[in-house]
Image 1: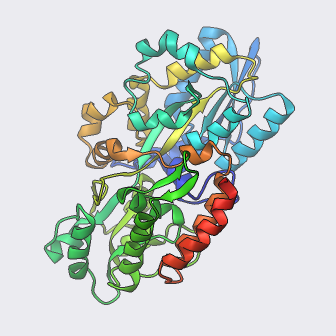
Image 2 (image 1 turned 90 degrees about the vertical axis):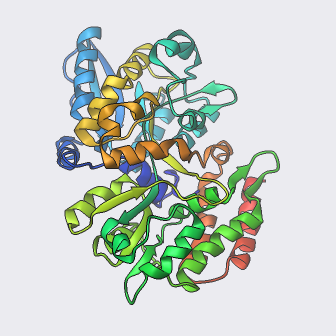
Amino acid sequence: MPGRTATSQYSRRDLLRIGGSVAAVGAAAPVLASCSRAPSTSSSGGGSKTFTMYWNSGHAYDTYNNVVSKFEKDHGVTVNWQKFQWPDLQTKLQADISAGTPPDLVEQPGGDTAIPLALTGDLMPLDAHIAKDGAAMGFPGDWQNASVMPWQHAGNTYGVQIHLTCSQLYYNKKMLAAAGVKPPATWDDLLAVGKKLTSGHRYAIALNQDPGYSVPWLQQNGVSEYDDATKQLLTPHPATIEALQFQHDLIYKYKYSPAPVPSSDYSGPQKLLSAQRAAMIITGPWDILPIRQAGGVDLGIAPPLMHKERKTILAGSGLIIPAKAKNRDLAWDLIKRLTTLEVELAVTKEAGQTMPRKSWTTQAPVKGDPLIGAVAQALPSGADWGQKLAATGKGPQVDDAYQTLYQSVAISGKTPQGPMSDFLATADKVVR
């Protein structure tokens, strides 16, 4: 719920999208190398036609550069490949759309950032191209089901997922082994192992101050962000309160987690795990590299926890074509080239990036890596969270209200009933 890029805050959902890479053994260095090689912008060169694309600066992998070079040669064009951090990319894109000069192809951090552009007629529906080429490229059949829906609205498809990841339970193998426990599979398991893993200033789990990290708990308790039929938020409300109460109790009743500290930094739990002061955290692949760099932790990744459902939030990025792009057919051709299974595997090998194709999860290099393989196995449990609310265009305002709700419970230690009432009083007015 929190963290839509239209907001000034920058929280977990954005970080899922930004981070979305698994720094597996041998892949951590390329992640940093590829980021450091990425310039803020690239020159437009002297081709007969210029094709412009906007990209996240952390995703400018050598594999994609090779694809772009072949694309330039085949079509006699020069690609003006401009790279940005997500907030800057959104600002630039909005300005260009307003000026009537959008780029030809854009990487977006999620369908919930793309659909508002579709609502204003600024995105090109991809359906005609999919009807022509979808079977040959395996779209949407070979994509994880939950990675297709977020890019759809009113029967049309506006984007193709290019990277895909999710949040899971990350744990210190040695700490769990020393306590004689296995990674918890359910909320009840977590309570059972919590007592054995908590001692003095060492905690079983560290919850995050960032409200986005609370979303998997809500999903696992059957909560939906927004019911577009009734225009109600966080339904059913008793399940929302129960999920928030569970997190509250982990901190203030059982004391299995330290109280999160108010901060704009989401990395506190990672630092506690790295310092071996917490045995488990809920996070995603972006925390693997700093944990490895800190040393001392034999890291394991468990499936998403199970309560009413085994579910977790999906993230990653996708590709869209602005409605007024000058080279729309070329943009579609480049989407096809950038999303082949061969390219997906090459990017995984280069940077540890995790991918949306179902067939990617069955490949030997993916299955054979304990960390990438663990993420791949969890992807089918992933679910979109923000699509319906995004379609209202009211997501950022609701995000702000939810941040107040979550942090009142997790940081201030209030029981959730009162903050939930305050949230509904504020957020319901926004969506109705």
